[in-house]
Image (cartoon, rainbow, N blue to C red):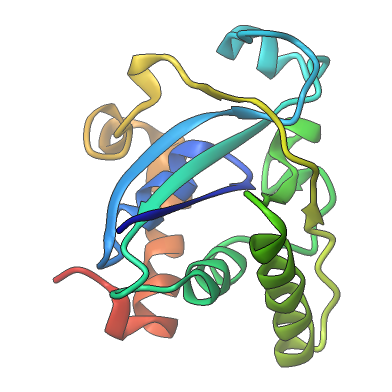
Length: 176
């Protein structure tokens, strides 16, 4: 039986690319969560006025990769110390956040942040937000790295270092 978790760690193209490389992950969907506009568009999200974050919904097999591992990978492959920013992407739509589905996921999110803080000696500003409506992003955002992303200079600069972090720190959970 599969489970899902929703996280936001900056540009969804970048976080999607990371989790598509994780064994036990069967699907990654880019989308918008945590805002006030119904059915937001990418253009609206980019204004930073809707309150939404660019996020990903990760579907995974907990018998292969469990939620604590997923959350550790999430925190370990972006910079959770930057408030409303990831590199050159600035605004609340690029915040580091976890959107737990239920109390168990909330507890796991709290534990993952505490673990990351203890292991790094830094303080994550990653928020654990209330349940919110998930809106899938437009089709052209899905599987972006596998398509247009490999020709996009921004993606070429940002995604490979994230994939290297994944392979270095979580080698036993990476697809070959």
